[in-house]
Image: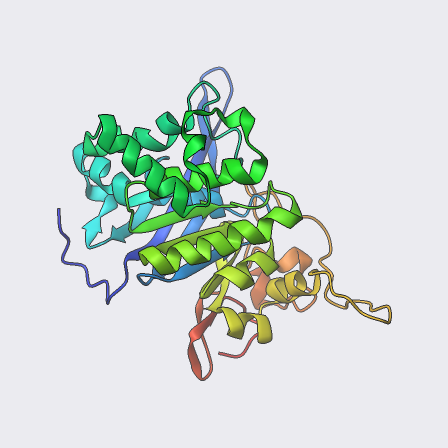
Amino acid sequence: MNTDANTNGFLLKVDDLKTYFPVRKGLMRRTVGYLKAVDGVSLAVKPATSFGLVGESGCGKTTAARSILRLIPVTSGKIIFDNIDILAANSARMRDIRASITLVFQDPFGSLNPRMTVANIVGEPLKIHKKITGSELAEQVRLILSKVGLSADAINRYPHEFSGGQRQRIGIARALILKPKLVICDEPVSALDVSIQSQILNLLKDLQQEFSLTYLFIAHDLAVVQFTCDIVAVMYMGKIVEQAPVNELYNNPLHPYTVALMAAIPKISVSPQTSTHRLKGEIPSIFNPPPGCPFNPRCQFAGENCFSQNPPLVPVAGNNEHLIACWHIKK
């Protein structure tokens, strides 16, 4: 099912994606409102690049990724992957699509079946999608295990016999066994020891270079995204509030929320420093968001427009690659 949409060389293009969950109350379970987990997200990812989605827990970044894979129902919007309209695809077509979009999960232990050997865990996608079995299957599993830094004797062992970092390597091998075009990395190092995180990040970068992989990288750690991604989008309460190439975003953050996140990154200094950009208050209820800009209760620059109108995501003056949703910044 090809689409006539113009993707302009992007592997993945998402336009105005909305994923709302109904809130029901009473004996009749009537819908009294909607939880707007993803509320108008648009993004475009070029082949062989890494696109980062960052933000606090609950901002909607994981829901956006699961919506792209249609693992949860989408309320509205358009998702074009490799010139295919995902939301219009039937179940048979989605089966093929899911062979080209794979996931690396956050929890390297909970995402692996403890009753299955590494051979079965990593080889299962090949059995399902490619109908490969026997010696050919075992050979492909050994090959991909070597690519992620695991020895051939791992093939008959179980997940509990490995460390956290090794288990994540198994998860990465499972994600790559089908040679996907897009890999969604959902907080792939946040559950690992700091000493192991850099090894896994370097592995992901090496694999991207070797296989020309495209990553949609979800994280809350800004330092991780800075190391991994080419483009970074900052999410807040279901919306993208700022997006820019990684160096531009880290050298010139403009949205007050992004500035506060950058200020929260630990820095080594010989003298004590006091940040003037600390976030105040708590994230508002996503079920009952404030009118206007969702960040206005925590923003020191909030003005009249901020409390009445939701700012659109538009380019800043003189830089079409740097997008921002803020009334405070001159466009």
